[in-house]
Length: 174
Image 1: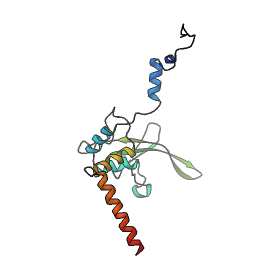
Image 2: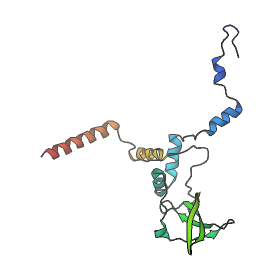
Image 3: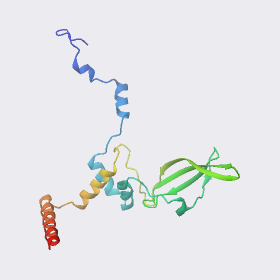
């Protein structure tokens, strides 16, 4: 689009995206959840779920702890093993194992794993409602800390911490 008066290309044409371009832009990353959505989520789940979310990973038992028991065999002949998170009890790691006979020994190798989430006994779910955005472990921790410190004055908190530091430094000198 040339501007007839100056012969230059309009600057706005570079920022206009087609419908396809807008869709591609949406797929490039994830939408981060708002602080309000994170607070609502944290208010509605158990402490165990918050621990897994804040940690950013689940605690699954090791082979030594849980043993190597397979639940089923899939259509490809792979052995399926299911492990439940020992913390939140809502995440299930599904492992696919392959068994092969090599040199007189049977060897097993994990070839794939995925996570499934189940609904708890009281209807509790691990994942946030769809459309709320991605909640990072840091956002979960920030929400928990904000709730724990709610109602405190920032000035009072600073004053108290400075007084405690001064007191500790004084005790260290003597």
